[in-house]
Image 1 (cartoon, one colour):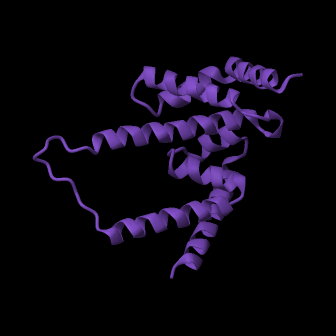
Image 2: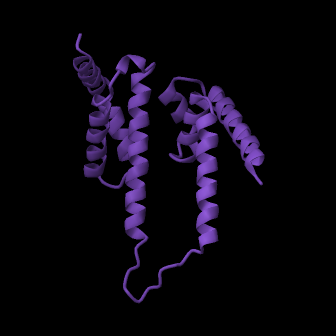
Image 3: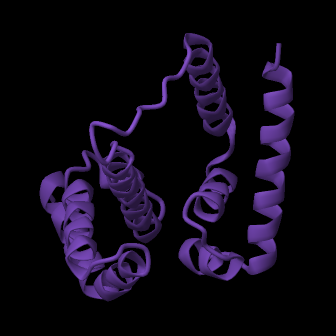
Length: 169
């Protein structure tokens, strides 16, 4: 079967089986139904653009990961829009070059440390800290028990702390 057709069939199957769950997941995290539907549509579009779906072990979890990433992008866009000064009279906070260098270094270190984590602990950490999901919600999403979610989260935090300490000057 053609790989493009295989991806589209897989996406169609996921839409049929988990479309409402995905939409509910998004609706709980954004303020409007229209935004949730837009993000869901973009989720499926990005899923369809995959080059080789056979490499994905759990397409359902991958679909929700795409959606979570899009939620993050959506929040960043909203935050940057609200961070603009309300008027020309409102001062813009200036950051020193040192502030910028330190925050960029921290971001690079954090990105490096996260990339070193095994896939499941990294996903659990991101879903819990960034997306605010509970152990039960994470477990349901990735197919493990609450106690396994807790173990993955603990191992991720421990590894992150150790690696960040190693990276400190």
